[in-house]
Length: 170
Ligand SMILES: O=P(O)(O)OC[C@H]1O[C@H](OP(=O)(O)OP(=O)(O)O)[C@H](O)[C@@H]1O
Ligand SMILES: Nc1ncnc2[nH]cnc12
Image (tube, rainbow, N blue to C red; front, side, top):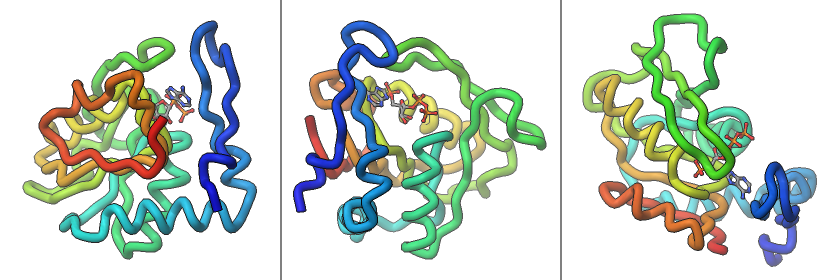
């Protein structure tokens, strides 16, 4: 099964010039969704880590499935005003604007190793911001795992310090 055939390209969404990689066709196909999670699991096989950290909203879908499959906990990273306890936060740039992300300040214990999981790696702004949050609360970034990497946006230039792995590269 060719996973790329379940990713739908939407030109000029959410802004002119952006090709949006829509994962909803993959999510609604049980075999494709299972294969996506299986492939993400495979590329993480040799990594030693304690927890998965994922951002809302699409990141939760893949982070939660991987956490369940690998028997790891999940730490949610959220947009402003959503997390109920004390948070650390960071402003960042993404392919179509700027945004802010929050993580609970007690989400990680000192030295805990995490994998950052998301559906799409585009400019790398979100992943770099999450890595800063992880370090801010005392964690270590063991690696990053994505279903889709948009290599033409050169995200790895922002992520030189990290072990970045992705299943589908465009
Ligand atoms: O590498 P970057 O340029 O930072 O872009 C990648 C991020 O953009 C998308 O999320 P978005 O902020 O659109 O939120 P959503 O998951 O709520 O749709 C995607 O799910 C990644 O989190
Ligand atoms: N081109 C894109 N398609 C889907 N999600 C994205 N997140 C950032 N850029 C994206």
